Length: 489
Ligand SMILES: *[C@@H]1O[C@H](CO)[C@@H](O)[C@H](O)[C@H]1NC(C)=O
Ligand SMILES: *[C@@H]1O[C@H](CO)[C@@H](O)[C@H](O)[C@H]1NC(C)=O
Ligand SMILES: *[C@@H]1O[C@H](CO)[C@@H](O)[C@H](O)[C@H]1NC(C)=O
Ligand SMILES: *[C@@H]1O[C@H](CO)[C@@H](O)[C@H](O)[C@H]1NC(C)=O
Ligand SMILES: *[C@@H]1O[C@H](CO)[C@@H](O)[C@H](O)[C@H]1NC(C)=O
Image 1 (cartoon, rainbow, N blue to C red):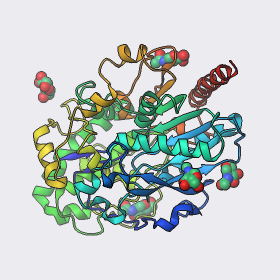
Image 2 (cartoon, helix red, strand yellow):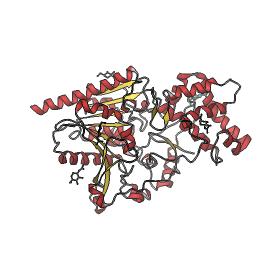
Image 3 (cartoon, rainbow, N blue to C red):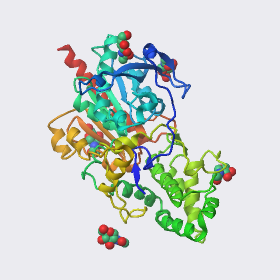
Image 4 (cartoon, rainbow, N blue to C red):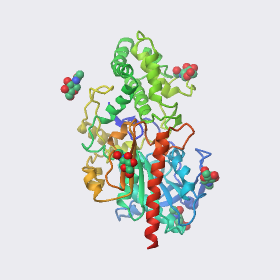
């Protein structure tokens, strides 16, 4: 059983989630403007841009056009003032817009235009509609370089249409979107004057970051709460196997309150795994609903559940109860649909990306709270071949965008990038955590989690978070001031 880690979700290798959204827009939709419907109160208007299928070849097929969705809010914008662009990542763009309130919060101060661009093949921006995922032939146009080129082409067109040639563009992105934002600044400096790249593990490739760091960091979060919590979860995996061998799957299904009987013990294992890993990623200091509705400090809350049981209670009950917090914080689940979770954010396409260029090797060390596992590249590549008919190119990302010796390389090339990371987020270990130059800076918070800085400000925000956002705003302002100063000359 291979677990593939998605930037946002550790998915089981082959997702069973059906592709939904049969929303390929016909040609007539070229000028279509619609109010978004998935998040009815989202303060953006959706537009669809006729985007070229293949920016890098001149075959007949390359010139095919698909409709790329983007969201716009021009309420605060004044001509000549900045354009803030979110470089969409692996999901429906409305989901990211709804969870990146930071850009809206700072727009009035900058009198900025806000643009969120959907990543090709996600949401409704599918080049071949429902056929997009049918074959490598159709999926082959899904890669980061095409996505960056999409953003460049779209931004140029938008600036032209709005007569906004003089407006400086700043790109924003979180997670994989943060990688794209940073890479966009490096590849298209003529289009973006700077990038805020939040929780972007651009060093998670090749052997730049130790392969065990993601799960070691996850484990550290639980260890920080209590050694008992860590130890109980660590023992839980063996207990799960024993229980299932001794009592069978139907007893296990009862214990886990599943809606239907489990088909395999691995369904239960993945269910627990997801709860512990995601809670570490989104271990926000305030209540939030990014992946799911969760309380403030979910890791602490899970550990309190585990530590609150008398020692004689069996381990599986403890870990199940902790994981239930993740799946049932709202209290609305009458049973758990383990093994049939819907892909509500449309993320399953990520497996293609993970099987081609986004190869991020991961292991579980014996120090972690997960069962130790090695990384078997050949096995992974064979599975990709079986699923998609292609083999990965594991070194392409570092060839295309760099990553090795990043400090040496970027201190002499490039400028105006903020890499922000919160150390509670397991992905932070693959991020840029050191200042590279006076204009390529790392903003690190010990208690932050996965692109926490991008969330809307709330009354409960701790001081360190307020300070972090303030520092980011000041840096962005300095880029814009400098740009405007240069323009005068
Ligand atoms: C743009 O955002 C502002 C502030 O959130 C909101 O008042 C306005 O209605 C939005 N505009 C559109 C077109 O949604
Ligand atoms: C700019 O205008 C052209 C012509 O109307 C249109 O085809 C294109 O989609 C517009 N660009 C954007 C980014 O909306
Ligand atoms: C979910 O939480 C509610 C409220 O605490 C509880 O009544 C229900 O049994 C829980 N569901 C499961 C499957 O444990
Ligand atoms: C953990 O792994 C290390 C290196 O792989 C090894 O030296 C050590 O003995 C292992 N510890 C345990 C408790 O298995
Ligand atoms: C990088 O420099 C900024 C000041 O420009 C500072 O606030 C920040 O703490 C530094 N980051 C690290 C990781 O030292």
